[in-house]
Image (cartoon, rainbow, N blue to C red; front, side, top):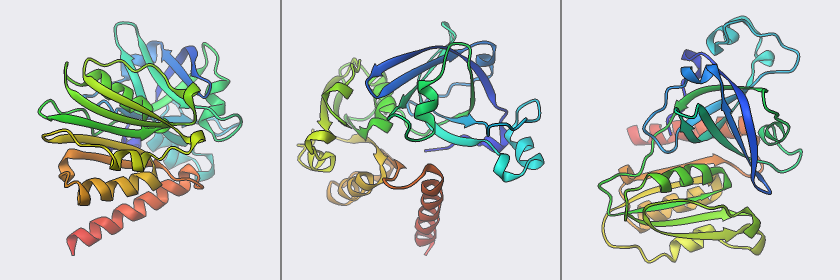
Length: 274
């Protein structure tokens, strides 16, 4: 995925319009206001923004700009950033929606989203992105966990009418399933972590439809790594027909995972040069 270049972009300042509890552990935050005019949508269904979390008690220079903040303030005062999918952007309604997974007091973004009220500020950078369902694909494969569910939902809405789709989504239990609209000929299989369902095994067992696939596989880094090997090496999916990335890694904070991911990417690039 192509990340928003935060050092070159001003912070977009929105106001919360409403929040919705989509499932017991998924909160949709709908924002808008005058600041939405600064948002520039792109053509991707995995359109990502960085949600900017200011450090408590720190006053930031105006206008808000990450380049200025990093130049003028010590690193311990820099805002923390978290990457999230834009679930939908509706220019006519003046709304931008982001879905957050919420597990009590765990993490940074989930508790923040649970405590938002109409009128509260939301700071964003972006968007970036790299994937949208290709119109020339014979069929589409969509695979992910809760972290990828917003992008999968957006992709299902974007596939051409009648397009063949196979989707696998891993969530905690049946209560975390949510309606997903599509005009495609889609088979959506929900898997439940609480019941021991195995996302990798489910994809391995899939009888691939005929023709060229365009695949989107995102979520926890462990299963993503296994499916990368399976799809590239065992199924022969061309690399340019596969959007695949670990959004997070079990047992790692977001900051540590980003460092590890950057190091892994540098190693892959070095190996490719050799």
